[in-house]
Every structure is written in structure tokens, then in C-alpha cells.
Image: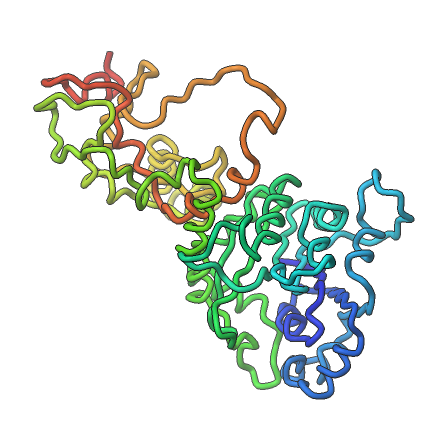
Amino acid sequence: NPRRVAIIGGGEGATLREVLKHKTVEKVIMIDIDEQMVHLSRQHLPFWSDCSMLLNSSRSCFNDPRVETYYLDAFQWFIDRFATKDIDTEQVVEEPFDVIIMDALDPQVQKEFADALYNEGPFVYSLWDALSESGVLVAQVGEASTIRSPSGEYSVDRNRLKFIEALAKLGFKAIRDYEESHNGFTTPWEFIVAFKDFDTKAEWFASGAAVNLKIRERAMITTTGESPFHYFDGATMKSYRYPSKGSQVVFCRHRSTAKYCIRGHGLDPKLVNLPGLGNFTKALIEQNSYMGLEKAVPGIFISPHTASLISRWPKEIPFWAHGGFSDILDIYIRKYGRFSLPHIKTKVVIDSTITKFMNQGCNGTNRMGHDFNITEGPTDPHLVSKGEEAAYNPARERQVHYYSNAIPLWDIANGTDLFDNNFGVQ
């Protein structure tokens, strides 16, 4: 529920128009260096900044009482107010923003000013400090990549690549891209969304119904009584969940050795699948193979919102209303589910049928899945992992599920009891 929003660029007023449709928004600050372009847009393209449909607004969105417009260099505006202490500049007090939207010069434009906007430097650093603790940065980054596009460092998209790398180094927990092909341009356009707090990313996977409910709760009242959102709804949001194939291909051309770039559609094409599972193995099952993929694939997937709701049931719903069912379901999820991160605001996957019970050893050993060994290691983040790959990896995001629990950790001999020591019995 964002209260404060900043718009960088967007002089024609369309971005401002859409932001003002949210009733939670109390203040919008728009910074555009080209005052003449804004005035020409208001004169000749008034429908782009038309807020007359919003009750208690104004005919022009620029005159809405929630709006402050600055005809200044946004680059310097943010540095003056949010630059780190390392930069010698006179600070101007400004409250952080919940959302910052960059609708500025396309990163593909070959100008020094575009380089300064998207490369690692004082402006990008100031964006981090300008966001609240759970703030979100949204940026349009030009024409979308295709499966034929070259790697970013060798194309006009190098500023887009540098921008993502800079955001990852700053500490954004998750960075996603998505395409929009209904904007009236000749090709789809690409957008970057960077989450300062990982829990905020859970909203990205909200169901279509949850998004529609949020729209109902947040939409400004219109003069006609209809929804002000003509282009956006729950079904549209679902189409943004996963990066495009082109984004994945271009990322893997840049990071050809990345883990998720050497697998096919979430599955390793080099591993043999041994179908059919019973109580005992009927042949040697080698470590580097899949075991019963046909049973592992139809697992139970629980979205972040649903998992959070189930966890609250025992506390919020009287026992007589659910008869203990919610407690059982919550225990089932926590005992058998695999959380993608160690907190509830993330997806949960529970293996289906027999595969779940083959891996519940009570002596701390697992036959299948990930072998987690905690060891002491370096604290230098540059030695731990590549920040960009951890925060931004469209190849990983497109592989909806990774069926690690179908991969044996070691060879399983012929005739092995798959349930031995798996029901808490030594």
C-alpha cells in the first residue's frame, strides 16, 4: 500500500495518471528535466494525463493536489537528497519513497547521460537510499530481448545489463524483468522490478483473485462508478510472473556456466529417469539419475499468500470452526513441505505420493534431494556468490520447480527398502 511515489521522467503524464488511481497514494513527486515537453503534452496530448474520471481529482493529473512537479535534472535531484555520505553534496531533507518509477531515457540510447542513469554510480546509489525499507524500484528498460538477441555486453543493451548488476551490488534482494506487449509500440517493451525486501516479492505471485481484490480495495472512486483501471487486472498480473524466454536466453549467453543455464526446462537432460516406485528397489539406482519423476512432478504447490493464510488459521479461527483441520494442515506443511526460503512468505512444495515418505529419515540422513552441510566460510560477499546471479536469474525463475527430491544422493542398491528408517523407526 504505497503512500509516497516518485516518477523519474514520464513527462507526458501517462505514468502519473496510473499512479494516481491508487487511493493509498498520498504524495507523487514527478521530476522531468524537459518542461517544454510536459507543456506540449498537456496541450496536444491531454488524454494521456486526463484524471477527470477520478472523483475529487482534476481534469489534468498534473493539477491533482497529491502531485508535486519539478522541472529539474532528476539525476541531481536524487543525489542532492539521498546521496551517500561519501559524496560531497549539500543534503536536502526528503522522506523516502515506497515506489520509484523510472520512465526516463531508454538505456539503449547512445548518450553519456544515459550511461550516467544506468551505470553503477552516485545516481543509482541514491535510488537505494531514496527507497523505504520495503521499497520497490520499477524501470522501463527499452525494447525487450528476443531469443536472437546477443549477450548484453556486446549490444546496445549493455546499459540494461550494467543497471541490473548495479542494483544487485546495492543489495536489492530480488530483481525481475517482465514484458508488456500491449503498449502500442511495434515490439514488446521490457521492465525491471527490484525489491529491496524479499518479503515484498511474495506479492508478485499473488493469485489473480487476490490482485483483483487489491484493485477493488485500492482503486480511487470514479465519477461513473466503474474501475479506473482499464488495462490492468489479476489475469494481466499473472502474465508478468515469469521472465520471457528471450530474457532467459540472453542471460545465459552472458552467464553460460550459471547453474540454471545448463538444465533443460527445470530438468537435467543428461540424467536418466527410472520410472515406477514401490517399497523395494528392483534394480541399482545410481546417484546421477532421476527416480520416479512421474510421481515427483505432480507435487503440491502452495503459493506464498496461501501458506501465510494457513499458518494463521490456528491462531485466528476458533477450534470449533475448523475442528482441528487447520492445525493438521499447518503441521503437514511444516513437516513435509520444502520452503524456498526460511520464512513463510515464500512458496512451499510438498512431494506427492510415495516420494514424500522415502525421505523422512529420523537419523538425520536423506537419500534424496539436497545434502545440506553447514560449514564455516568467508564473509566477503564477493567470495560467497555473484550478487547479480543470486538476485537476478531469469533462467532460474522460468524453471518453476526444480525436482531435487527425485535425485538420489548416493547409489541405492537393488532390493533396498525405500521406507527403512523413514517413518521414525530405528
